[in-house]
Image 1: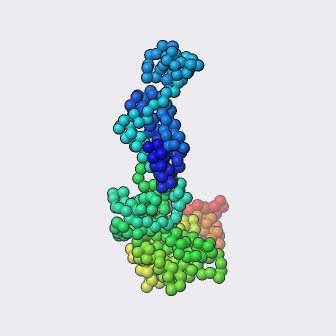
Image 2: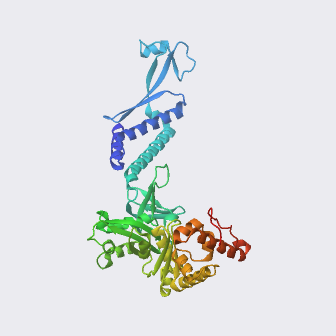
Length: 430
C-alpha cells in the first residue's frame, strides 16, 4: 500500500506537471486535518513521508508534566520515563500513531485537501504558463456557452470570451474552432483565468502582425487602429524602409494577406491607410475613398472642417456617419465634413456679414476674410490686439471695427449682446 501511494504521487506529478513536494505537502496537511477532526483541534502531531518506501508516519506529541490535567495533551513524568528514561518535566515526547485508524471521514477529508491542492497547483501552473502571453492570439475549441460567455478549451486549460468581447452577430457552436486575442490573465481561485477578446483593436493589430512578415520584422509599423467590430475598421501604417510600400505589404499579392484577415473577422471591411505626420494629409488619407477639396484646421481645439465635392459628401460621411467617425478616431481630431456648395454659401454669407459692418468696404472685408474672420460675429468677439496682429490694421481702425461689430450684435437681439470694445490707451473712435 505504501508503494502504491508512492506510485500515485509519482504519476500525478508526472502527468499534471505538479512538483512532488507540493503533493507530499498536501497529503501531510490532509492527514493532519483528518487526525484533528477525530482527536480534537488541540492535538499536536507531526506527519512525515518517506520517499524511498512511500510510508507515512504520524507522531502525536505530549508534554511531560508533574500532574496530568489533560491526558490527550499531557503525560506524567513517570509514564514519560517509560518511553524515554532521560526525559524531564517540560519536555515533549512523540508517540507514533496508526495513520489508517482515522476512519472514513478522515480519508474523505484527506482526499478533499489533496484535490484542492492539486487544483491550486494547476491554477498556479496555468497562470505561470500564460501570464506572459497577454497580447497573443490563441486558437481554441468552443467548449460550452453559458451566462458568463463562451468557454474556450485551449488544451491545458479553459478561457472565457465574455459577451462584451464578442463581435455582434457572430455565432459559435460547441466544438467549433475559435481564434481570439488574450486580453488578460488573472490569478483567481475559481472560473477561467484567461480572458479572451475578438473586439479589441489590438486583435486586429495582432492578426496583421501574424499575417504580414514586414510588420513582425519591424519594417512596417501600425500607428493607429479605429475599429467598429464586425462592420468596418481603419488601420494606419508606415514604413521604415522607403523601398517598402506599407499599404501594399499589408494588402499582399492579389489582396491575399488582408483577405485572410477579413475572413478571420467574418467579413469585416478593413481600410488600410498610409499614416502621415501632417494631420490634414492624414485626415485626407483616412477619409478615402472620398476626395477632399480643402481642410480648415483649428489646432487649439484639435478640430478640422473638411470640404468635399457635393457628389463626394455621402461617401466621405459614410453609412450612418461611419466613415468620418472612424477617420476622426484614427486621426485623433474632431472632423466635420461639409460640401463645397454649403461651404461656398457659408463663405458668401460670411463675406456679406463682414460688408455689413459700418466702415467696412470690399478691400477691408477681403482683408478680414483672408485673416480668418468669416462673419461680423467673429469680429465682435475678438480683441483689438488680435485683430491688429492678424490683419495689420491700425489700433484705431481695429478698435473702431470691433465697436461697430458689437453694436450690430446688440441690435441683433439681447442674447447676442457683447461687451464694449477694448480700446488701447490714447486711441479714440473716429
